[in-house]
Length: 116
Image 1: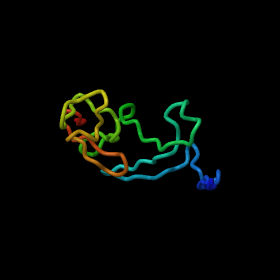
Image 2: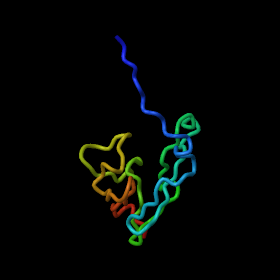
Image 3: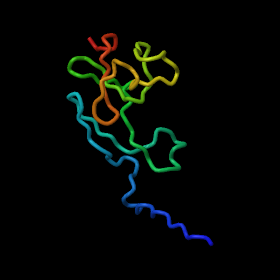
């Protein structure tokens, strides 16, 4: 005998995030960032938008001490220092120079990356 499977209903369309909606305001290491919903690529537009994190490689932001902000999931730089070797998939979160902040944001404490 078959049972009827009841799926959880999808949230109403008006409560789903839309591109540009504010996800969260984050203050970390003395700076405030707005995280909004959006799409990284046009191909992603078939689904719901994701939280978009700042692209600190394209637009660097620094602490008062000159340390660059990073996202945990961005590709590690050439100064990576961590367990094992650096590969094409190595991210900043795996580096000993990474100091975690709120959400997926942090700073790089590597002296070579510091803004003088």
